[in-house]
Length: 490
Image (cartoon, rainbow, N blue to C red; front, side):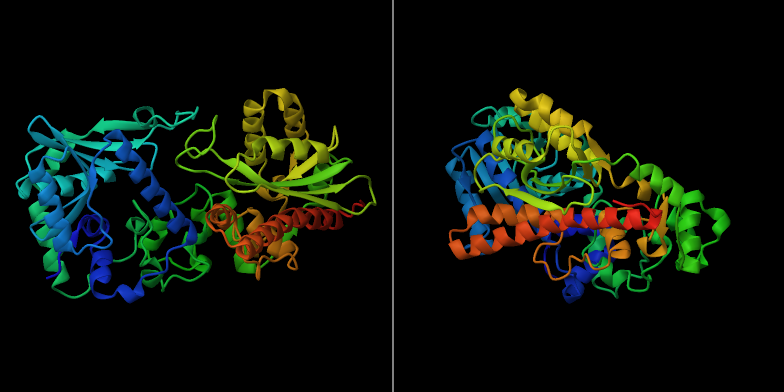
């Protein structure tokens, strides 16, 4: 039987069926989403940077070497007395592992597993435990086991200091406690792999601790509108599923809370509603000059600029539509930073030059846009008051949809812009755009900084501008629709 690995072991802990499909039916796996691939790439960068905690070590590369060559290279470095080995490779009990950092410590070794998260999660313990098992079984004298994660309160100021950027948590105790159960766990997995596909039904484990890449296959029997479409904190959809209720139109309405019942009833009757009076109350707050604003941001695990924290959302682009007076046409303004330079000051100054003092600023999801402005103000104290004034002038176009003053069954219980806009303004579609969501936008921005072909950079720049413009133009059209529904003029 083929060997298992650290990732296959933890996959099997999450779900035996997932492990079976990975080994026997890999063609059923879904393609990873772009944001997941970006997360993996970020994790690799963090892992590489963590080597600075123990500089001067030797890497055992995965690419370019066979498994046997990696094992031989690791043995060679251990025999040579190398202090730190990166990606040290071992096989024991037919389990293959590569240790992020293996460091000598008083005649034995410490194991360090690097994570790009900002906290320790319990499922990481099994990740380290299987490595500890393999290394110990391979004859490596083990001392401590550590999880290395990012310090989320770290603020960059010049070169990043690895000892301050990372947090080292000693989990030796819990890792040792898990050792006794590992042989039986491996035996169960191997017995399972020799049989037929396990008859495991879907459940919360499909997304815990990770969304399974065989989910589309296992969930094929679940219709588009199902109990799992129910939004909010009402009844647990798994409770309904275990009772045999799968389709949304089979849900017992008396089991639902107010919002969920509304969602189910409107789906059953395929109806919509709008409260003109509530909509008019919302519209009465809107004044001129009127701006429609949307930011695009990126968040990197390793802060790129001074004054930023890990994963802090840094704005690199905005789109702004502005209507100066009632009855006037909307003018469009935009900004997209050149990659590889701190965009914040130039972006903020340009934005303030295009939003008139005292303007009403319409956004969708006000908490996000206000946080961007607040963090810009913290970084740029000289214009903090002006940025705060812009934030104070914001109105959230999400409000009437969150309150369900307006609701349509096709919104499927959601009030996100991607759910609302296609229903009320169907001509405002993201289909055909190369970039269709914020994750793709931030990834495209990073890609711009990595390529040298001017034509390719120009293509990505055009795609980013088209996407962000679509967001604020969508807000313009959505406001027009609200006014039409309320019987209000411009």
